Length: 113
Image (cartoon, rainbow, N blue to C red):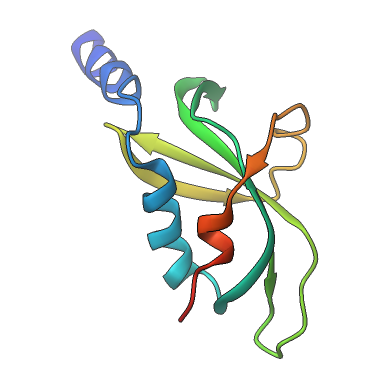
């Protein structure tokens, strides 16, 4: 049991190297309309504790179009990583990311279909 916990901790401690490219690739399929995303911001990867586990994560803020074409409004998500690779995206992360130092994320704004 301890060996499994140690292996999990080690997997979560690998920093993501291509986190922006990984997020852009995910968002291409995650969003109903990946073109013309506005107000995209991201944080640098940092260790965060969620559900009792420390892992690398980034906060992501963006405004994407709904399927009808109108913008949905700014959305905050958190993206987690395992073994340096994107693991999952969690929506409604405004509280988790309330103190985040966001940086512009033009790569996401340039995303097209």
